[in-house]
Structure formats: structure tokens, C-alpha cells
Picture 1 (cartoon, rainbow, N blue to C red):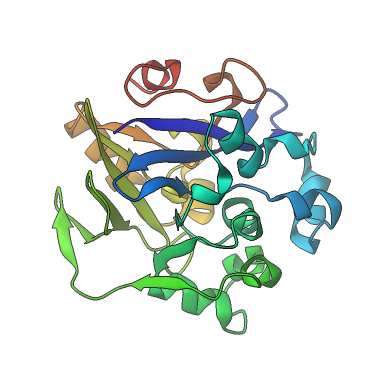
Picture 2: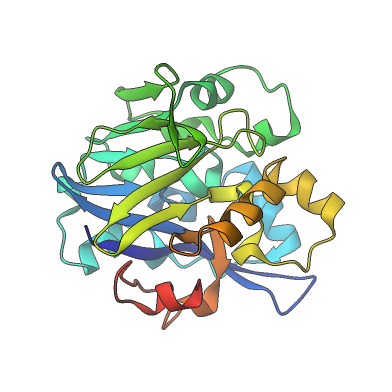
Length: 261
């Protein structure tokens, strides 16, 4: 399986100013066609900004380039966006699920706890990152939570694709946040989503890290150290991971792999 790395939403921090970051989405070729893991912002977000995006722009510098939308990047890779019939979400925050309206015929695969948190009245601070309109055109969801198995010791749920893909339960950043594990030609790729800070940086104070990413950060780092054969990524990465402002890499041959070794 080839996995493309997509930058679907870039921004720069105001403090620290040297942090130039991107929202990492994956495009995996499977037996059911290309599967998109997270979406970044969607085309509508650049025209009709949500309240949470406007607030985010107060504390960051966002180029607001609509060409970063996943639907455009999928097309630039040579795929017809209409053939993306499956989207897997680590969680449903605006910067991970904003592109759902651009793929109206796709089934959305997400943990049941996350979907329930998204649809209920906000109960926790992280719920403020949800934008309800992002699911308006999506009547079909595949929800997971039953038949929990194990993937390298983590509680996980097998997704219906070949080669293997798993939702790995890493609750905390949001109520139903998950990582996504993908078996590639060269071994496992494990995207931990927002369960660890940008590119596994250690620049963030531990207390702030726990507040931002949840309770699994230390366990994720320990797992990464114990399993060097597994390529691990975070949901937000350094912009330098990509050759240019936008772009993609291969999970087997691209510069993205070397950046995470």
C-alpha cells in the first residue's frame, strides 16, 4: 500500500514564531479505492469561516490558501475526488473534518464516542472545536466501538480495508479521539493524530502538553522508542516535512519517511 502525505492546512504560530506547521492528512490506496485519513479544512471554510477558525486566526498566522483543501490535493495526485468513497477520522475538530463536505458520497469512519461527542451539547472545552455544518451532507457514517481488539497492545478496531487499517483508541484530546494504523509495503505507519504534540516536539512544557493533547503523550513516546520499525507521525507536523508549501510524500519512499526516522 502506498500512502501519500498531504498538507491540508498550514499556519504559523505567533509564539513561538519559528513554528511553521501543517495538518497532516493521509491518502491510502486500498482494495476499496483511495481512503482519506482526516481532511484538513474544506473549500467552504475558506469562504465561510467558522467561529473557531476565526478565533484560531487570532493566535496564529494562517495563509488561508484554498488550494490546500484535500479535494484539490487528491486531484493533483491524479485521483478523481469522486472515487474517494471512504474517509477515516482521528477526530472531528474543524481542522481534521472540515473537508467532509467536499466528498459528499464518502462513508465517514469514526469512533462512536467521537460522533456522540460531536452531536451532543458541548460538555468539555475540546467540544468547542467542532463545527456542525461539516457533517451536513454526510448521511452515512460507519461508527466503531464494539469488538475491540488489540494492535501492538493498544485497544483498537479493525477497519474494513485491505491492506490492514486500524482505529487505535487514544481518547483524551477529544472524547473519542483515535490514532490510525496502516500497513504499508515497508511496514506499519501509525498516525497518532493529536495524541502527541507537533512532530513529537519536546519544546512544549509537560503540563501544557497534557492540556493540549490528552493523557497518552508519554505512552506514545515510549511506544515510539520501543518500536523503531514502526513509522509514527502526528496529526500536526512541521511544514518543512513537505518539499513546498503544499505537497505530498510517499510512506515508502518519500522525504516524509526520513523526517520521522
